[in-house]
Amino acid sequence: MFFRQALLPISSLFISIAFLATGYGMLMTYIGLYLKQAGLSEMAIGLINSAFFLGALLAAVFSQKLIVSVGHARSFSAFSAIMVMAFLGHTLFYHPGFWAALRLLSGFAFYALLIVLESWLNEKSSSDDRGRVLAVYTVVFFLATAIGQLILGMDISSHVVFVLGSVLVLASLFLVAITRISQPVLPPFQRYSLPKVLHIAPLALVGSVIGGFFVGGFYTMVPVFVLNTYGQQAVVATFMAISILGGLLAQWPVGTLSDRYGRRKLLAWAGLFSFAICILLALFASQVWLFYLLGFLLGTSLFSIYPLSVARANDRLDHGKDLVEVSRSLLFAYGIGSFLAPLLLGAVLGISGGLFFTVLAVAALLLGGYALTAERIANENLSVYVAVPAASGASLAQLDPRQDEQWVEDHKPSYPAQPDIIDDTEPATPDNVGSPRSSAEVTRPAVPADD
Image (cartoon, rainbow, N blue to C red; front, side, top):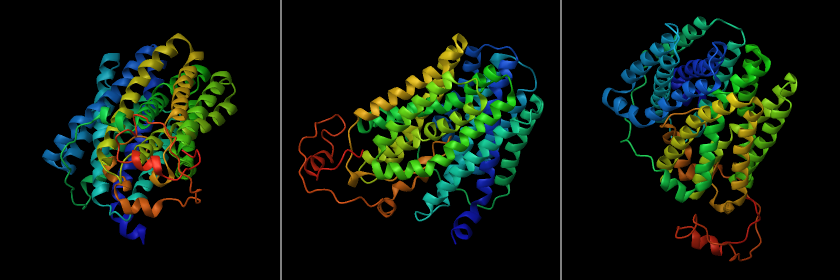
């Protein structure tokens, strides 16, 4: 019933997303490999790759105006044309500055395309099936991105990679061009308010920045590190695909555990577990089978940080109030972390390969340590974990089913009854002073340290 009524009418959008994500995953990994094989320094590679995420940040701010002006179908065509021109531009001639400009255009176009597709999915999803639609979107995106890595394992030439990426974008455009789905109306643009998010949920903001740092570094500079270590493109492709699949497979257990035990504990786990895996990667990078295993384990934690952070922010909001604004701001913070990752990791990798995973380990340790010191949230105030794609546009927040209070109530896990003891010892924190929940939390029944 769900497939026939909800998925089948918008199946063309999911196939379009799959084509885009395959090209995205393939090109994100390949650019660093090509530049390294061309003899460019790691610092220069980081600068060029960071331009992609700068384009993503610009798309989050400026693309919506064009979409509102000309409509979804026409703007999708325009952004697809920009992306194809950028992909094919790599085949014209090689110059670091020129390629940086092409990466900026690619990032802008790709994330603008995601905004179009996500707002379309939101328009065609009801409150009853929005959560399942988002889950399908997440699975499609992860699997398609992993397929993009496996294509690189075929050791195809550079011209074929860029042409194939262009073909995938055009295939996505073809499906959208012939779709009979009516075009949605985007809401007015809302400014991002990072100070507001910092006041409401500082742990969510920190987690979003570090989550973006990990994912941005993973797609841009980890391939360069693996190529430096093993010298084989096939090893790079396999490691990346295994790690992405680890991230996909972890979404359900991480979501279940975070709904049961709280986001604070799971964010602490994601940070400390990533710290341990990064240390092991730094020590045992030379053994390929162990390297693959550690990559899978790293994927389970690094791709969980951002969705856990969004869930933490929802725990701090009253019945989904300001959910869209806060989620968009967290996504912007995620983009900032992704932008900074290639810059810092490129500089570090240029100094010493041994320091590469050490820097990632320090970032993970900061997240884990900060999560352990964050305020606990009572079971009754917890929202519900929702998995999100590894990359998403600014319209993803509108697709989040946690906007519906009834959906949250229906999907909350049942908690064991707690002793009827008054807990008035919780210290005041910047998060709870003056908030509508603070007085209730002072007099609520005591709960174990579950969040």
